[in-house]
Image (cartoon, rainbow, N blue to C red; front, side, top):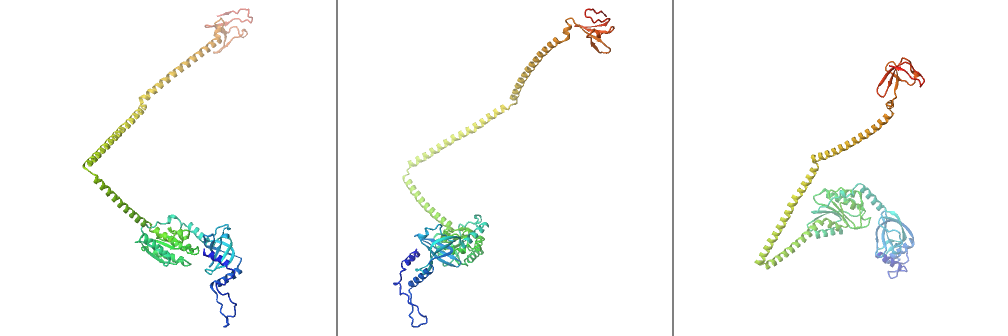
Length: 492
């Protein structure tokens, strides 16, 4: 960069300046007519001022906001410190830049330590930085981020509200400076790509405090005259963040968002972003790119038509050449052979189609037959006669099992009964009576009778009953003896 070269030359030339002009003479009273005028060369005056400034401001700290930061190919960093309405150019040489722990960027508030010098080639005051500390984002950057966040929350940046550009606009409304290079670039691109497209320029101030009002007025004017333009392009060349600050205006952003005509934002370079870029329906990296985007559909159609026309012409010439070659080689025999081959090919195709038809018919018959057999089998399994026979068979088997179980149960019970009867007969008193014994009952009044166990319970004249093995004997007691050896006389 020239700034770095001039500064280094000045450092090497600090021994004095004799070739640049006469040394300054001793000052005398201004009103003395005999005093010789002191004449300075520009270089000598600038060097003298530089030496005095460097002596006075040899080590100081300056706080401000970085703007227009640009690294040089040599590794030096050039930027501007801005504070309110004042600004100071700053150069950070490569040997100090490599020691930084952060990367300077536009909008960053920093504290810079260095010395004040003068860039002689421009007579410009500048700060030669030795070290730099970040202080956070600057006022412009903070305002940009805050406005961006607020409009984003309101939905002004949503892709759903952005409209498509008309594919074939008849007229483009351009809000820009009529004397700048931007309008000339747009005109050149449009004329080169689409000569029949009209351009209507709304002159506006594109930099400074009044620029947002001019740009917003241009957008409103085109919306008030919708028949004049199909799309609006806001175009401006590149610049620092301060130069583009007018396009971060909230009123301008809302005017763009309320526009009924699609708006294309073409502000600055590809790396520059403003609020107008986010609100617009389409952002173009540069004004020239905006002109290309607006005319893209027409240009593609023209290119496509031209390409298709060239292809049609080439194809026509190619087919014409081949037709001529074929007709030149034709003869009656060749034509007959070709006709015969064509007929044979069609016969072969017909045979193939017949085979396919027969196969399709067979498939159409075979498949329903298979389905019919399957249905018959299912119906046979569901036949009531078969189900009744199976049920009758199961019933007979169950009846036989039940009869066998009943017979076995009766036999078992009969066997137990016989055993029980045998035991009962063995214990029955009747069995004892059959051996010659008898049971004697003392007959009492009524239906009751008592078994006579002892002769002491018998009274002469009472009636007794003797139960024998077969039958019963009724007798009257005539006499009872306790002695077992005596005989008892009884009478009927």
